[in-house]
Image (cartoon, rainbow, N blue to C red):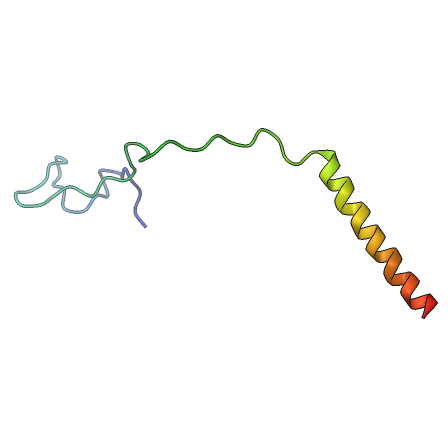
Length: 73
């Protein structure tokens, strides 16, 4: 992989003055000038505490039911 702005001393096809001999093209330029469309706004915060509490409560309830089924059966 080449760097976007190579060292002129190591750039192929340049003469001792840093000029391009006739017919050669300069190395490709890296990067882009901008974005094609606006980026969506970032989320300001992750989930709150309540979704986590509900998920944990459901997991505990299912675990209790499974353990109860083992001992009752």
